[in-house]
Length: 180
Image (cartoon, rainbow, N blue to C red; front, side, top):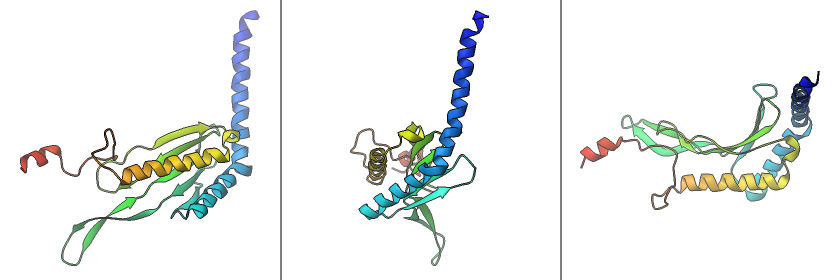
């Protein structure tokens, strides 16, 4: 049955991919997860960045290592009465190393956002890696890109062409036009 040559080749490729998934998951558990945590923590310590590294372990083989800049009061609030103010919470952004279903690792930037103030900007995908491809110089580049992106978000200015803050104004455009 020479007609099955291509099919047999595809079956071998499929089996190889399944084996790689198991290998990648094992690499995450045995060393990659801890290497990520240690490297990110070392960068935090060396740069004196106010950040925290955590492991999200909700689902087996879908864990994530998250470097977060935390949450704070945004400085924006609604005055309810003389004594009560409702503050909007600001999420300061995060850098995420998330296992995918196939054991590979996606690296994402979650942009800062302010709850109740428009729609958050979607996460930015930096890359998807096989565990053995993630090397220390990449981690430094990821951190540099993350810090660049959150700095641009914080320093939003309409003088910069094409710069997006990641959410719409809290007043519809029509309201701004009719208030003049």
